[in-house]
Image 1: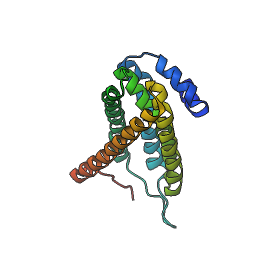
Image 2: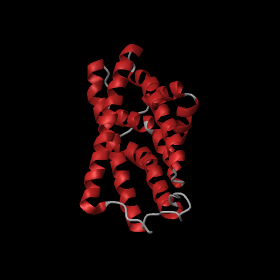
Image 3: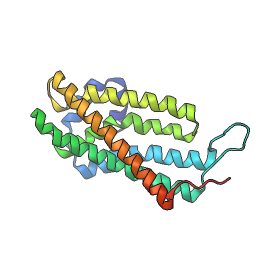
Length: 199
C-alpha cells in the first residue's frame, strides 16, 4: 500500500498503470488500504480535539470530552468508508457508459487512492486550527481533483476527452456524497449526538 501512496505523489501516471494491473478482492482492498487510510483523519481528529483543542483569543483551549470525540470520530470514520464504497460503486456503474470493464474491486481501489490526499490531509486535525485546516484541506482537495483527472483515463484505459467527462461526472457525484454526509451529520447532531465540550 505505502509504495502506491508515495508513487501517487511522485509519479502518478506510472502509479495509476501499476494499480490498474493489480486485481484485489473488495475485502482485501478494504482491509489493507481503505480501513487504514480512512483511520488517519478519524484518529487525528480524536487526538486533536481531546488533547490540543481550539484556542479562541486569550481564552483557554476548548476541547471535546473523550466520549463525545470518540463517537464523532467513529461516525466520521464510518462515513468515509461508506463514501469510498459509494464512489467506487458509481465509478463501476458509470464505466459501462465509456466501454470500460473494471471490476468493482478496481473501482473501489481507484476511489480509495484518489481520496488518499484527503485522508493524509486529515493529519492536520492533530492541531485543529482554522487556518491550518483550510490551508491543508485546500491543498488536499486540489491534489485529489488532479489525481482524479489524470488517473481516470489511464486507469479506465479510455481516451483523454472521454476521461475528462467521466472525471467531471465522478467529481459531481463526490460533491453530492459530501453534501449528503454533511446533511446526515446535522440530522444526527439534532438527535443529541453532537459535540460535548469540556469547558
